[in-house]
Amino acid sequence: MALSTLPRLLDASQHLRRGPAPGSRRRESRLRVEALEDRNLLSTMLVVDDDHAQAPNAQYTSINAAVAAAHPGDTIRVEPGTYHESVLVNKSLTFLADRGKGDVIVDPGTLGSGFNVQANDVRIKGFTIQDALGNAGINLSRSFSGYVIEQNVLRDNTFGINLSSNGAHATLIRDNAFLHNDAAGPASGNGIYSDQGVSNARIEGNFFTGQDNAAMLFNGNGTPAQAQTNLRIRGNVLIDDATIGLVNTTNSEISNNFSLRSNGSGIFFGGGVSGVVVSHNVLRDGAFTGINLRFDPADYSVSAPDTNNVIAGNVISGFGDSGIRLREGASGNLVVGNYVTDNGTASDTATGDGITLENADNNIIRDNFVARNVRDGIRVDADSTGNRIQGNRLQDNGRFDAEDLSTGSGTAGTANLWIDNTGDTQNRPGLLARRNRGHHEDHDDHDEHDHHDHRGHDIEHDHDD
Image 1: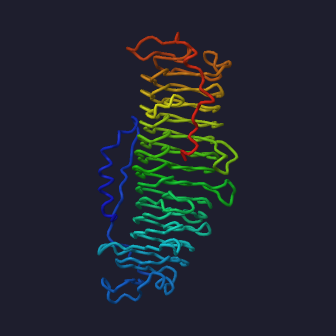
Image 2: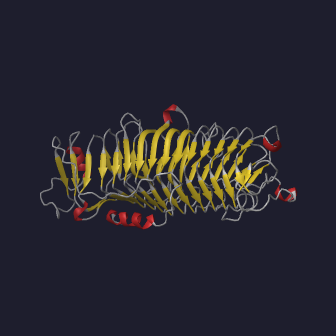
Image 3: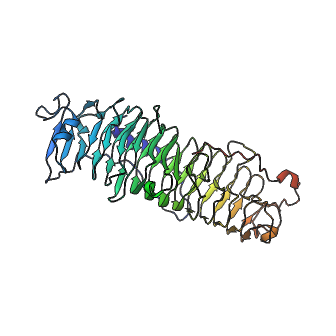
């Protein structure tokens, strides 16, 4: 697919978006296709043309030959053609594809990554990078930083970008398209993958479709050597793709992204995630959970659950199991101002809630609108304690608007505080301070056997990463 067609894809996706939660603002997200630019007057321009058809006076016919001749700070302009090479970048260089005359394709096959970057402050713009078999289309080293990767198409590689950086200089991954990066090999099925550590990086305005495992997966082991921090994931569009996944990640942001028909969860935390703000995303019609906070040491090198994160102002609808799940030790998280509706489309009797707390303690669930979910609006299991559930508006959920299966000295004999929530149905009197106007009486006299805790039958969806 030519990059010039991608803005039309994004324009077509706009009509699919529901408006954000009241009071929120969303930034338009589209790939910007710009003319060839960057007239760096202090650098030398080296020209590459594989057949001298577009640039008869080009000095080089391979990109690697131009790299060998270049000095740090130089620019390498590459004319249209297909370059069957793995480019080793060991200097601070700018690579510009002159795609105004046609696609500039780097196709390394089994030779390695399309670009293997082993230097600071490298920019790669406008290329189609494909068929890196057993490798990433672009490999970025943990030993360096200051990468700018923009307006490229990464397609049919084993994975799109191996994103690592030591964070000394800011890294920017912007306006790229990640298409079907699912070829066999390690880390297959990921658009952006990181397991060596990355920090001080922005991932903005990219388009993802057709990845089998994750649009983005940050999978460090939690050691300082593999630290993952100060990531800004903003304004990306994911259509018929996969999750945004974080493991052992701190002090980061996932905001203003649009996800439609994810093959797993919309956003997934696997454990060790702290200080991350998830805000103003629109997540629709995915297979598993809209936003899923788990502690999953069976699949990831994690030693702690997800703590002290903020989930705010997101629109979450149409997911197969539930809208937002705080699970397996998640604590100290704030879930506020989200619009969570119409989840539970997979008809799994053990899920189908708007917001659930499952062995999750000391979280705040506040000022959310939760409606028309197949099972419960807000559900708290018997193992969740010390949570504050306040000011939520609950209506038209399938079984109960509010259900709490814990016992203790909190509201209505639970182990949690329920304050000033509105709704119509509850599993015990006192969870709802007010009923929604115009709705029927609470169904508190339903057979409690029909509403027992389904622990032991809860499907954990171990592969929704």
